View 1: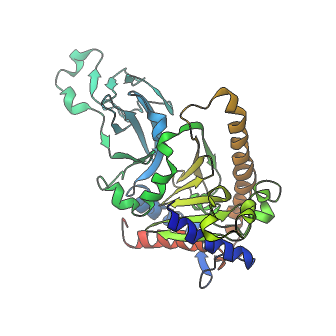
View 2 (view 1 turned 60 degrees about the horizontal axis):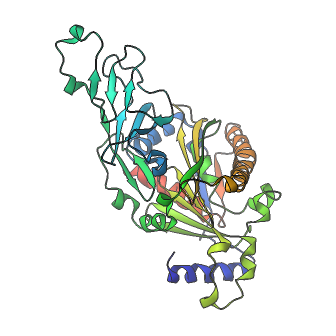
View 3 (view 1 turned 90 degrees about the vertical axis):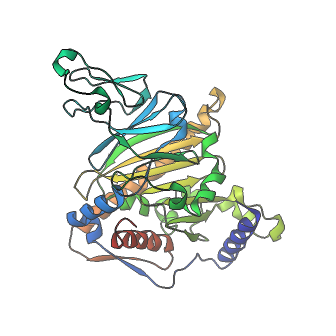
Length: 384
């Protein structure tokens, strides 16, 4: 974060804390309950958000060596992302060109070639068809025309974006806009993946993003976990193109907020929560980065698949430091998985009760306003 931005945000946070308040929107925001439970609305989201936008699917560090791969399922499409011999990334439909089977079942790993288990057709890391058993049975086909079908993929700032699945490649720099510089400052590319987890959840994918964008619940739901470290007030939200940045002060902020502005180096006293359109949250902590994605699980608006990464600043965590990083992982899981998501499941159930046709995001929850307004805009304008 540049000095001018740091001072500007620092002054705002100090003023809000002094007034015992948080940033306020001009008015409340009403969000239709149907956007969380209606199958037709989900189908439009799948078409316009998850098939026509680039989506974060990995950290670059997971694909460090040629032959390193990750598979990911998005809206019925299984994709295979592989690091190539020349260092670039390539992505393909994870579909055998013989009978359409999934070629790779593993979620991640390292291989020089990929073999379909059904009939052992073999593909190279570049997607080319290398071998067909009993080739006399396929004398009439051109192997070059039977390579794995490519998908757009690009990496920036230590993160890997897949897609759009439909509509062709995207200019990732234009897509990120002002968020590009913010991500670059986190130096994710220099770090390593300490832990990754993928798990299904019984809630709408938007509730995963909602979880991170307000402090209102922190002193109540998290009073015994992160509420001991994070303030429930003083938060600032900024729109960054189609993305957004939510800055939350730690309780330690009191130690610096009374200092003169030129001495107020507050990087150690905040958490930066970044909403990357449409479905990702990148959390900057003072010594590491966490990021989360959520995608719909098929055509059921009540289900999603969540992926979580914990990025350490070093590519390889030293044995002496593993206990520290295990503790960070337990705090992460003990807050979101053990507190936020169980609450979100009850929200999802409550949406089906008929008790209300909309929910209200308060003036003190501007990050939620911007998130849902960004979705409305993108879906109203096609691919956004």
